[in-house]
Length: 183
Length: 183
DNA sequence: TTCTGCATGTAAAATGTTACATGATTGG
DNA sequence: CCAATCATGTAACATTTTACATGCAGAA
Image (tube, rainbow over all chains, first blue to last red; front, side, top):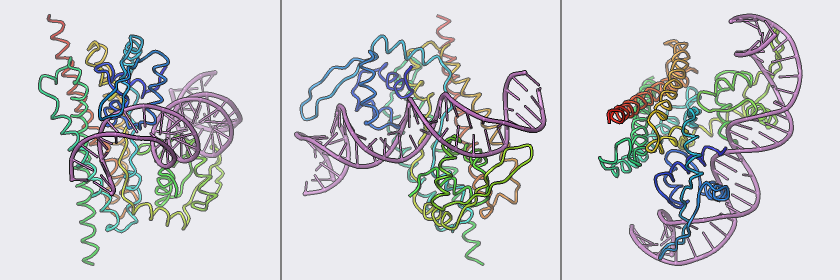
């Protein structure tokens, strides 16, 4: 039994062989993991026979190891895929900060939500960019891009919900600020 | 400098003194942490003077330690609150599984999204229940319940977005399944 | 009578982050 | 010239999870 990140990496390799660096970039939006976690994991997966790699020499760029999933790897992914998904976990500092905004100056807390709005803007632009790269004939169930297609759609609509919420909170805080200053 | 969870616990203690057990229950929906992480952290916070505790003996129930934030704790929370929030991180096994549904049987993958739907149903019911406990006059910016009020609203609308997405994906998968069986 | 909730704690293992380490190329 | 991108790796540290440990009361 492997850990979730390992299965995630194997899952990505089912559609395309790629380097650890590429895997890092592709898994980032859906599972935050640094290269320092991914490289040792790939080495372990290689030793256990879930993947193989080929060293590719490049001009102008450093050499890379291109990983390919093995039959054993594919079997393992399929077994994992059949099991029910565990619940998602989210860790958001802003939610902890929200718990104590009631006793702080509105001037201090409004910027928190403005910062978050900017973060969401950046993310959404990134998601939209990735989504625009998926052509219409790649948007069907049997396309290897189908996963990206549905996940980017989810990411965008969830980000929109967060954005609306930020605006709602900011409007409440600004109303309170006005009332404070008029007294 | 403390870690995020520590600030979160202190933040909750700004509105009300409570036990480690209560803190665990109250922080769970927004920051997943087990008691085995919280108890040692509270002990550390107590040693460093951010909180104090009083042992309360109870009939029918085990004794408990009721923690109260100190002036030092309150100062620390306020300093932390002023800093911009770091970005939220989400880890969802279903998003990794989504990446490789293209090569699996639809029969195998549809249940993944049905399971997720059930998980969302349970969560939403829980959020609604908590939200219903917040009276209208506790829904304003200066109420200690304001944090809960806005966070529960966010949790519900985000869960709704996830639910819609699940339905969308399921409908696509079922359409594909029908086409498969008609061939 | 067995399970759940209340209530606290420790120890070990797994997972994740930050920092150290190297080095070429391209764009601003 | 400085920063970013590509590309891989290790070591130390911090965080989180799982398992071990106890024990009473009330509900099913």
